[in-house]
Structures are given as structure tokens and as C-alpha cells.
Amino acid sequence: MQQFTVPQFIDVESKIIGPITTRQFLIFLGAAVIIGISFKIFDFALFLTVGIFVFALAGTFAFLKINGRPFHYFLLNFIQTLRRNNLRVWNHHLGFIERDTTDVSIRPEALPVPKELYHSSHLADLALVVDTKGRYRGDDDVEI
Image 1: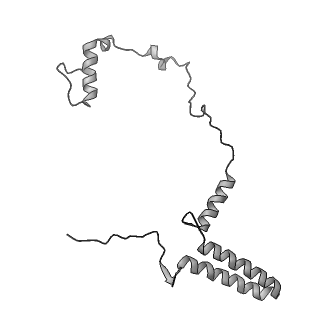
Image 2: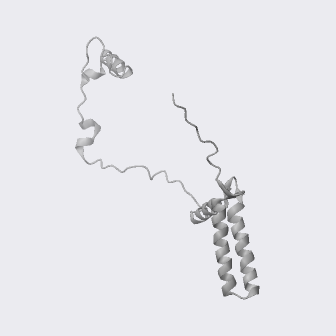
Image 3: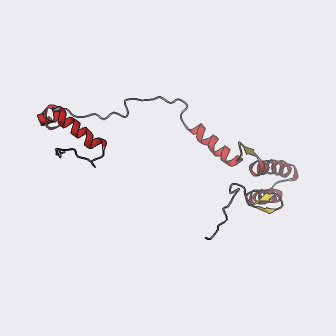
């Protein structure tokens, strides 16, 4: 019999550079590009302010985990929660289907019901058929 290795720790991201994962590396690479562009565009004081802000934001998205989940999942869930209604009201009438009772063909009294079904022996035979899921039909072979 051939043996297979079962992967374990599938929720752990693979490390590429020391303790840095691919996701974290790409986040810091994007932050470095933004900081480099701001160095070329802004003067030094504004560059320093933007650089510190972008570096702190990149560190937050790369390393911060809330309830064991990365920060961007938390942020997306927070935004979805803010977009939902705050007040939820249960409407128990929503599931009901309005039926038109003017049609005579669907009224219960219009349906023909054979009187022999009310006989107790027939009811017992029918119950036996239902309980055995049709495998045993009884002695009389009742028509269903």
C-alpha cells in the first residue's frame, strides 16, 4: 500500500527571507515604492511625515494580527459591519405565501376522499407500509 504524507500546519505561511513571509515582503516592497516616490516629489519635512505614516501602515498590515487573523481581514470585516443596517427586525409575515381560495378545485372539500380509508384495518395496513418504507405490504396487499 502506498503511503502519502499529509500536510500539516497548512494555515502557516511559508517564509522566504528569515521570518518574513511573501505577503509581508510584498507589503513592505509596496511601502518602499511609495516612500521612494514621495522622496522624489515632496520636500524633506513632508517626505519624513509621509514616510513614517506609510511605514507604520505597512507594519500594521504586515505584522498585526487580531484574533489570529491578519489585519486586512479585520479591516474588511469592520467595513462590512459598518455598511450593514444597525437595526434588524424580524418579519414573520415575510415567509407566508398568499393563496387564492376562490378556485374550487383546490379546496379540501372538493377533493374526493374514499371512505374505505377510514376503516381501522386499512389504516393499520397503511401504517405498516409507511413504517416499513414499502417493503412489507401486509396480508391484503393494500393498494396505495
